Length: 289
Length: 181
Image 1 (spheres, rainbow over the protein chains, first blue to last red):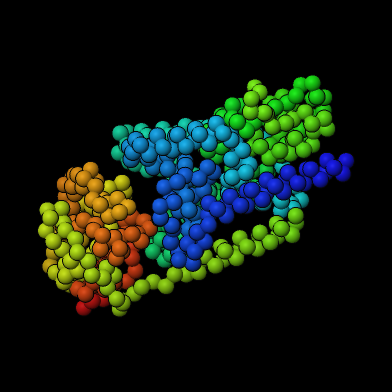
Image 2 (image 1 turned 45 degrees about the horizontal axis):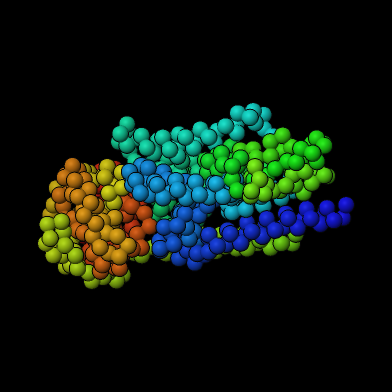
């Protein structure tokens, strides 16, 4: 029992370490906060794999979802192909392991959830429906609207970034607006809406595990589609599984891992693997199905 | 584990607090915003920092071909230029016409020219140049950005980020002109 406990805390801490290290790497331009300016150098042409706002003063790379919307709306074909190629490459390698290991906003939600609250919620009413929302946002706000708004409405804008993304509000909007007088006079009703949405997510994250990832993240929606085929995926050994359901109880996203080890909702935190009494859940070997 | 989380939280808090101080706004008297630069307009006519001497107040409007709010306000700016002909000159600079090394991109020039034509923004429109990029354009964080300069190229008041309606610009211009009496 002691050995299992040790293994659990070791893999949990390793994941946290990787999350922090990658967040520090992708947001290493801390001087942007004191200079109140975003980094615009050559590294910005690289996409980071997770959700990380281009406009964060500390950000060194570009958000793939933001880049996709921008390139689609301004008809930059090569940029669209670059981003889609990047997302496909990362998706086929890691699937939603990006969410569990490499996304700074995922890290933020993980940390917020560690804050002790009198009651933690496992699911919201209407959970199944809510979890389809992120696919709608991906299809509509990330792809269709940026693509079709130009011929239909004559406007070119990143719809998800502008109207929804709380990552952008927290990482970019708040630091820049609060430190820049000229931006304050430009901030209006839209900024208030974005703030309300971001605050709701932040507060919800203390009570419910990863609300943004579950309901709103278009990038997670996309990567989730790769979960079944990615190089980094889980496999349940049917011979070892005793159907005890411990994996589902341990899963903070309430996934029935023993039935569905590569669910579109799974962010690869590994809690199920750590708790399985027969070690039936394993990372799939590269050469086996 | 718990201590590590607390440590992390403290670091994040410190960084966010540090980043939230008020920026001191550059006001009336200061050095020239663009310094000394050389560039041309779309017809190839040479321009430098002397362009600000033409009128007592210059409104420099930094815009971009990808920026719809910039384009939407340009007809209003053209109208304002006609209205305040004697006292004000508007100078437009499209900031997305060069690549990272300062080389002009022909497709971008074409896009900008077509926008200027369709919006009627026929006031002075300058191209970005290496000296202009170095002086100011490389640090532009958001468009449209509008700054008001006196004859010496020194900034008057705050910079204005974001587009505004014609009446909003009119009251800003009136206020600045009044302050210059």
